[in-house]
Length: 426
Image 1 (cartoon, rainbow, N blue to C red):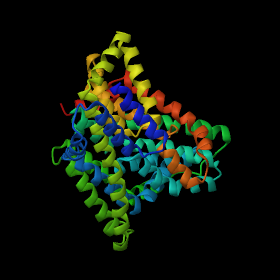
Image 2: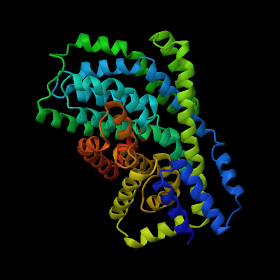
Image 3: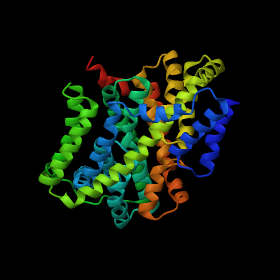
C-alpha cells in the first residue's frame, strides 16, 4: 500500500497540473503521513542536505554561463561558421542549425536553453529561407536535446552525484554520443530537405569564407576546450569549470564580442536564478522521494522483479531503455535520474555494464523526453517561438525521435562510443 500511495499520489498531483517539483514533495509528504516510517522532518532535512553538495554547485553556474553566452553574441557567430561549412549543401540551413545547437550544447548544458537561444534566431530564419515552419521548429527542438548530452551537462552532474560516478568521466564520455545523435538528426534533415527540394542557402563555400567565420567564432569555439581540457587535465573540478565558464562568458560578452552591457546583467542573473530555483527544487524533492523509495526497499523489489523476468542481458537492457523512454515522456530529466539511478544502476552493473556507459545510456534516453509529449519541454519552448501547436510540432519531430532512438541502440551495443575517449586517460 505504501508504494501505491507514493506513486498514486504523485500521479494524481501530476494530473492536477501541479509542477513536478512540488508534486514530488507533496507525494513524499502524503506517504510519510500515511506510513509513519519516518518523521515529517525527514522531508525538510532532505530538501536541505541534498543540495549541500560541492558538485551540485556546478548547476547554477552552468545555467548562468549559458544565459550569459546566449546573450553575448555567441549564437549568431556559431551559426555563421556552421553555415559556411554546410550552407551550400541540400538542406544546408537545417544542417547548419543542428551543428549550431551542438556547438551551443558545449556551452549551456541545458536542452531548453539551447532551443531558446538558437530557436529564437533560427526558426524565423529557416522559414524566411523557404523551410516549412513545423520542420524548422522540430529541427531546433530535436537538436536542442543534444544540450544535455554534449558536455557540460547538468543531468550528467546529477547522475554523477546520485550514482557515485566521476562527473569528469561522464563529460568526456558524452562527447562521441552527442556527435552521434547530431549526425542522426542531420541525416533526417538531409533526407527531408532532399524530398522537399530545400537547396543550399549559399552558392559555394570558399576556404577563405570558412576561415573568416571560424575566426569570428573563435572565442566561442575555445570554451569547450577550456572546460573539458581543464577538467581532464586536472586543473580544476567540474564545479570550478562552471565558474570558469561564467567568467569567460563575461569576458567574451563584454570585451571580445562587446554585445553585453552592464544593464543586461540584472535580467541575466534574474533569469538564471529562476531556472536554478526550479532545478534545485526538483533536485531536493526528487532526492527525498528517492530516499523514501530506498527506505521502503522498493528499488530492491523492482530490481529483483526485473531480473526474474529474464536472464538475457540484451532483453534486460532493452527493457530498461524502454522504461527510460517512457518515463521521459512524463517526468523531468533530473527527477528521473535521481529517482531511477539507485534502482537501475545496480541492475545494469549486475549484467556487466560500466557505470559511466550506463550513465550515458540513461542521459541520452531521457534526453529524448525533451521532444516527446506530454512533457516535451523543448516542444513547448519551440511552440512559444513559432506559434505552432504542440500537435503539429510533435508530428514533424517524430522522424527525429526515430533517429535518436536508433542512436541510443548504437550507444547500447557499441560501448566504445561512450568509453573510447575515457580510455586515453587511463
